[in-house]
Image 1 (cartoon, helix red, strand yellow):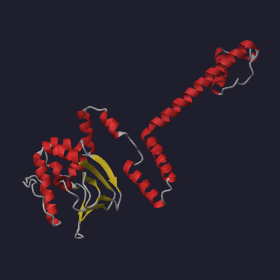
Image 2 (cartoon, helix red, strand yellow; image 1 turned 90 degrees about the horizontal axis):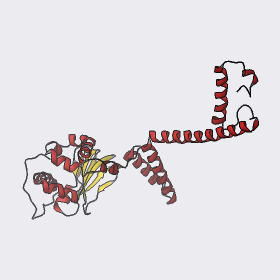
Image 3 (tube, one colour; image 1 turned 90 degrees about the vertical axis):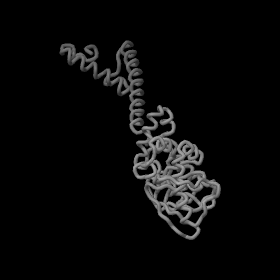
Length: 283
């Protein structure tokens, strides 16, 4: 630095190197030639080299900083990107305002601002870890449901691993009378109304289940079910339902007990040829 700044020739080495560090940083961080223009070809080439190194480091710093900020909440970023696509979809199809609002509210309640590829995450884990996570996530459902509380833990685990989480909004018809049933539902949180032909209305809430009659009788839906509040449910497909109950026939009888009681209430007959053996298990 003494060649560029003559008054530093007799200064201490600390001041000389401090000035040299300042000049190097001004080249590298400000992406310029610093406080003074270079003198001589050697100074020019060294300045250009430091500017190139500085520009590279600056770009790497910005890239790493951006990646770090995005990784702090990648699930929220993924949700925002997904919802932007939904907004563009709604705009492209010119959906009415009330429909857009319902879609927005559905996304808010279903994903709560975060989005995960849950199936992929669970699919990468070992079976014991997967079962442990599913049992933990469904702990409130198991605690509130007498059917699970009094059942074989192996049956509970087998059932929980096949459940699929779903959300319904107030006024949604989860089940419509007369349709072919492909699912039954367990209520984690919310209130639903069972509507029958005689305009009878029965309420079900946390810890209850519905839709099993159609899966047991292999017929059509005997009643409609409407969500009265935002409902967080777990659905079970007919194939998974039969698969699990083949391994646990006593639990099939528990489901049949409740199904027959519900059919009696709405004045329907249990289809002939199906098992009517009841169990002491409390569903």
